[in-house]
Each structure stands twice: as structure tokens, then as C-alpha cells.
Image (cartoon, rainbow, N blue to C red; front, side, top):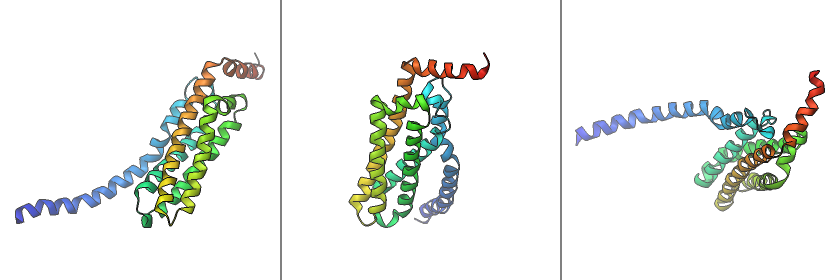
Length: 191
């Protein structure tokens, strides 16, 4: 019996510090992991993705933060959910601000994000994200409200990501999103 306890004791001694180190390593790479897709999208010839390069990384970081906090609100005990609530509010605020920038800050190339399927998805992401953020604040004493807030934040993140995808595809399909900006740049280049 003592021989079996030694390996188990060794495991119990080694795993907690290894888990802490792994947690710090995960925290160090999380921002890059959360935003690399946005960088890949912005580095394409798809007009609405390419022009959104200043906004996409923050939007994707906020979306990842909100959805991670949403999963924590679903799973964490109510007494331990305060950090997840703060992250949910911060992430949802970043995501909502990023959507607003996409819809208004790209001149003509914002149009695909406001219309069609992309517009519907991004509006849904905004509404559901705001509801999830409110639930994170108001649900401190209710397990049900916390879980519903978490579900809303996860749904908002999915709607936002699919909306960005749909907006890019719409801009790639319509030549005006390529031709009009090119014509607008031509006199500035001296040609």
C-alpha cells in the first residue's frame, strides 16, 4: 500500500505547480491566439476585411474574451463567478465597440456589414451581446441569470464572427467594393 501511495503523492506534488506554469503560459499566448484569425482575414484581398485591419484584432479579442467569460458564467459556481463577470463586461464592451467601428468607420466598405445577412448577424450580435453584458452585471445573485448571460455572450460571439465572415464575402462578390475605392485612390497616387 505504501508503494502505491508514493507515486500518487509525487503526482499530487508535481501537478499543481505544473498547472500554474501552464496557466501562465496560456495567459501569455492567449492574446495572439484570440486575434490571429483577424490578422489573417485583414491580410487578404477581400475589400471589407482588408480595410478593417485596424479594428478586427480588438474586435476578435473582445469577442474571445466575452465568449470565454460566457462559458465561465455557465460553468462556474455563483460564489466564484465575479472575475468572469468582470471579463464578460470588458469583452462584450470591446466587441460592441468593434462592431460599431466596422459598421461606420470604413466608408463604403462598411456597407456590407450593415446590409444583408452580415447586417442581420451583426445586429443580432449587438443585441444579444448587450443582453449578455447586462445579465453578467445583474445576475450576481442568480444562477439562472448568470447561465443565460453566458449563453447570450457565446451566441453574440458566434453571430459577430459569422457576420464578419458574411460581410467580407458580400464585399468580394460585388465589384463596386473594389473598383470605387481604387478609383478614389488613383488621383492621390499621381497617376
